[in-house]
Image (tube, rainbow, N blue to C red):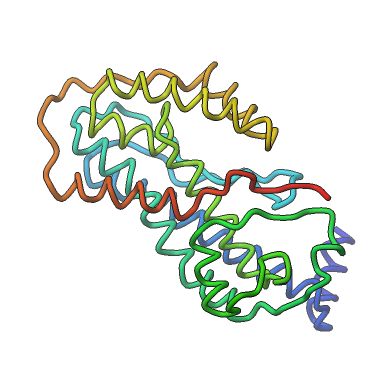
Length: 255
């Protein structure tokens, strides 16, 4: 209780560390919330019972392991599976873009920044494109990102992980709805092998590979054979583009 009270006092006094924390945490929570409410509202649209979003606090670098909703009833239609799977990444990506743009615009050039921290963050394509617009010809290591840009970076990482085309991740739902159970099974196995390979560069991919191998390889069967509409096929291409723009093969390295 005393630490909470001390935090309020620091906030009232204008402590810069508190404001920096808020500039990071509030955008990040809004991005995660947008992602999960995207799923929630599409579940409601298709008559699928789902819980409200839960946040997962964690003593990690970003203070959270994300958020989730619990789907409590089966999904019977391929188009419902597709819509529910893709709605979260689209909502989260649209929510993070303004924070990414504003955050990069508030960032600054700091040539010695890379030598003043233990952590070096990967640069996904979406972030690098904005960095080059704001700071032409300046390497990423020389840019000190604003906390709001770091929140958007964390949102990009969450989007990329959720869009991995495997298991029961959002990308796995999209893959299953587009190509069916057989291709879903083969692609999931292939991507587990890819994650094992990437683990030699960033160990956390081994954790994801193990979790998906043990718990997430199989997808609940959807017996509906109705083909998806052309619009949904194009949306699946957009999901692939979001994945490419968001992924960082080595998200965090330690100097």
